[in-house]
Image (cartoon, rainbow, N blue to C red; front, top):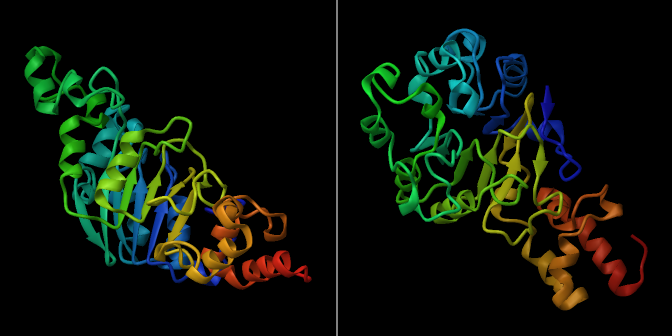
Length: 310
């Protein structure tokens, strides 16, 4: 069981135990770490970030925790690899907990979901949406010969494809607090600007994604600035992200820390806040302050300004 603790944020266990939500990276058929984390931390709800590949119906796999927490998920590209992968998820008693293409209030947060992946033969979101080969799953189905259809609809593989219709339905939705996706936002080397645009349109505070098997706090690692419109995390297979996370949900460092940094560094303040610092265990001052360490960041700033001892 691996909590999401990259070099950016070293959350104390007692803080994680109070988590309202927990997000889990791609299980790929192994739910032991999910069950163990729920039994230990007792969150109000959990969200699985795709590629579940349940070996048995999902309600059977997660039976030990169904009375302990609410379970939600989005699907990933591998959830349509085989008939058992598909049926054990989309045919399970928990199938209605799929967040794909909708917003659901979970544990006090409005959570939007976008499952699956972009496939350029259907839609490459780097191109105008009008150039998509097929706007919807139904449009693809109508183009297929009956013998080429699967269970009377589109090919199983494309049931984990993101269609423009799915994306635009979310884009036009009311505001949300959290966006969960299988694909990554643009900050990831294989991420997508379309995810950023969706997150910004929804006004979310948090984007949590799976797919790339990497645990990363993009702000804590200095890959995004603390002034970004949302805070993004990737969650690895076997890892989890607990939320809220020591004040990050309130939007970054306290204002007095930002003011002090501006006083000390002027226009270079943001660059200093977003650069990993050796005195903060390699964390950025912005992430460290947002995670409850604002006193130490203030002391560093005061020492730089006045030549004192940290």
